[in-house]
Structure formats: structure tokens, C-alpha cells
Length: 338
Image 1 (cartoon, rainbow, N blue to C red):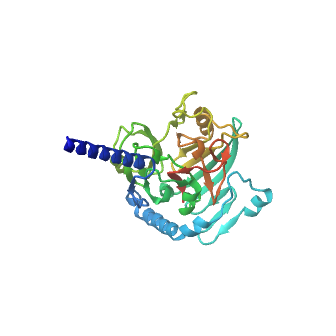
Image 2: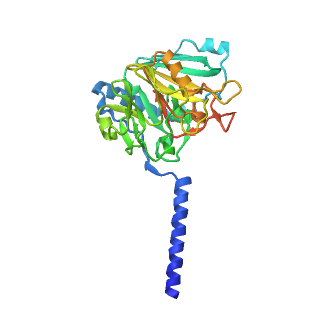
Image 3: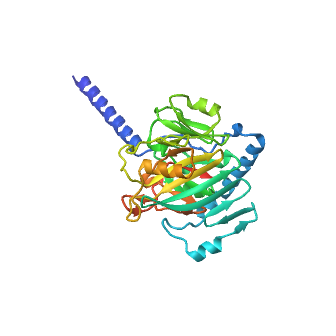
């Protein structure tokens, strides 16, 4: 009897310890799968392009500290007229880049930023034209792939010397769904959802994750794959219904979306929302707006408090966290140009 009691007590103690560990792992400790997630799979680009992007990445690494300490304006701060005028036409002789408050241009990219009002909501659009899809990249918070690892969009962007960035699909809140970043597979378990695939040839396509394995997608030239959704536009046609929504999200929300007008010609779109000035957009309103821009393929990324656009060292929209508080939410990843 005594031996039975001791065994039962040991069993109960082991079960308690395991339950405690499981709770800690699920809610506190990050499950890290790759402590160094900065790899670029350049094999899908030609040799000249690969060398170019490798040099660019080395420059990023060398300037990460200075980029991280670079000042940026607080969310929602508006540029003054004189500030905009003084910024116009400034040039960086080191890389022949020419930038202004609303634009950036160098030998490999051209970015212009505009602001629109849609359904009583401020919407920020970055029109992006690239010489190669290699300049449309992704980055993880703390350069680490895993769950519960987060930083703000601006922190991740500054660390990578990004010119333009938006929040990604917040992969770290999910246990499944393909994660393909910079041509590397980090998660290969399908959740059956539609993916936004960015190919090395500069095209975008909506693909069912049940149709291919993650490795097959990379073999087909998929450079980036994002898993959130839904698809907003396919072949120029609206792909969401008037009442379609993401999970339990409200009908009007801050939004983040990526779209393609043509190969190597993209739009990054972020809307405000949940404030007195901007209510937010429904998915169908977002899709219709992107269609009006001439977008052929468009996809919804994580929105709500995550929605953030960063351009040339500053946050340009009004990200909301905890209701109407204007502050960035920490996220798992970003999509950026750099």
C-alpha cells in the first residue's frame, strides 16, 4: 500500500510538472526553431542579381546599429509644409539615391507615397517599382524564427535598413500555415488556407496551400509566401463578398494589404482605423479601393493594431493598440523594400 501511495504521488508530481511546463512553453517561453533566420536563398535569381542582393545584405548587416539608432517621428506626426519642401530632392551620393518626404529612387527601385481618403478613413499607399523581386524582402522580429518573438514594425525595419516596410502576417500566433521567407522554408505544415506567393520573376499569385508542399513552391520560384488572407483581388476581380471578414474582426478595421499591378510593380496599402478621424475599412472596401488603383492581385495581411507603414525612418500612419491608443503593436515579422 505504501509503495502504491508513493508511486501515485510521484505520478501526480510528474503530471503537475509537465502541465506547468506546457503552460509556460505555450504562454511564456518562445519555441525557437531557428535562432539565425536571416538566410537568403539566392539560387532562384541570376548570378549578377544574386551578387547585387548579397552586397546589399552585407551593407544592411554593417549598418544595422546606425539604422536602429536613427531617429523617426512618432506615429501620427504630420510633416509641415516647410519640412516637406526642404526634404524634396535630397540626394545620397554614396548610392545615388534621391529621396523626398513622399518618394525614394535609386538604380533598383522607385517608391512614391500618397495618402487617400476612403469611406472616411485615411489610407496610405506606397507605389513600388523594382528592377528585381530580390528587393522585396521579409524579416523576423529579433532576426529569429519562432513563436512569441515580437518587435514593432519600425524596430525590425530600422534594424534591416528598410526604406519601406509594413507589418507581415504575424505567423508567430499560429502553429500551422506555410512560412516561406526570402526563398527559405521555415514552416511546412499546411493549414489549408490561400497563400500570397511572390515569385522570383516579380509576379504575385494566390495559391492554395493544399495544392503544393512548401518545398514544391520554392522549387517553382516562390521567394515569399504569406499566410493570412483572404485574397482581395484575383485577375483584377474582387474576390471577397460584401460581408466577408477575418475571424471575429470588426467590419471596419485598420488594414494592411499587398498588391501587384504588373510584374515588379507593387502597392503596399495600410489604412488607419478605430479613431475618431478614421473608422477603418471593410475587406470589400479595401478590395474595391485597390482595384481602383489598377491592382490585379491583392491579399490581406494582419490588420487591426498590427497595421503599420514605415517609410524612410518613420511611421507614416496611425497604428492603434488597445482601442484608440496611437502606438505600434509588436509583431512577428515585416515585409519590406531594401
